[in-house]
Image 1 (spheres, helix red, strand yellow):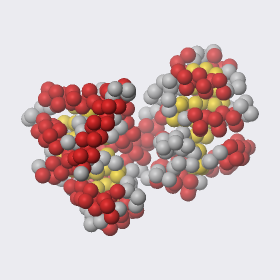
Image 2 (cartoon, helix red, strand yellow):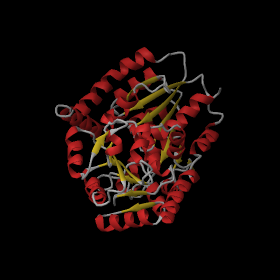
Image 3 (cartoon, one colour):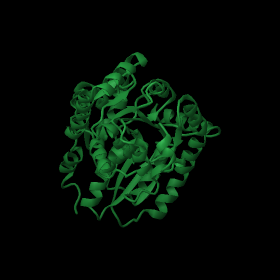
Image 4 (tube, helix red, strand yellow):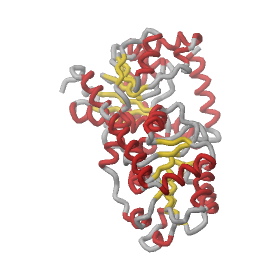
Length: 409
């Protein structure tokens, strides 16, 4: 049944590629991956294989990847992606020796991929549970680990009809999970080779904070005024906070929308009262006249949060919120929409008082009124958010301690 589902998925992707440039790019990358492996893999070298579905999972696994490279420099690093949003952004990442797409999980693709890549160890980040890859890695006695995975009772593994598929988890030599709930769920289906290590993403955001870029134009835009940063925002998010800030011109507003297409940017600009400047068009002079700065390029958001006193994280009115800890690491409170239940860190931030979920303006307006008028409350909320991130660091060290001895320097 699984192989039939994969073939149907592949057929659906081929059909979708007729209408989607992103899917077409993915399929082309999968076709090219075997040639990449054939020409770039050194048959005389051992490789550590890291697989990340997309950019978010890459950032999550990056601290472990970089520490493994540092401590075991004789090993090569093979990095694979499934989504173009990961590969196209990180295809020139200098921390890996070989980077390519991962082909669909069909038995023939799996055998061909592993024959060419011949990894000595594999790491699947968070939600990657490809049955044929995991079965074949197990059959070839290649150690494979799940990193920063998190499990919930509603997942297929824990349903009566999912018992067959749950067997795929036994292929992992070890699972490094984020919380005790995940460990307990796995124990319930007989998977006990589990360690609660936490989430390597906390290690990553602390690295990012240390390496944050200095952005003089953003600093000039702030003019020492209280600044609200909206990151990865979508239209429903923007409708809420723009309405508020149109009535509070004393506050500086920075918007880094998730979609930076021209149509969406013009929609945002049309909703804002007052002068708006796009970052790619900003100068030392025109930012001083603006009350809203729109970040219309990629790669700056993680640094821009350090210029804010309050952060809003988009996506909570859609499929789910984006990265909250990327902002919280700077010691500022974070606000997000109602669809956050799948994200442990969002629930933790709410519990500690560093995060806030809102459903509409009836929630957002009084919350912002309090944060803007009560400096002690603003400061305390931010401190709680920052302390939470620092308290969850260390997952990479836990994993490395467990792996000690598996690799030889």
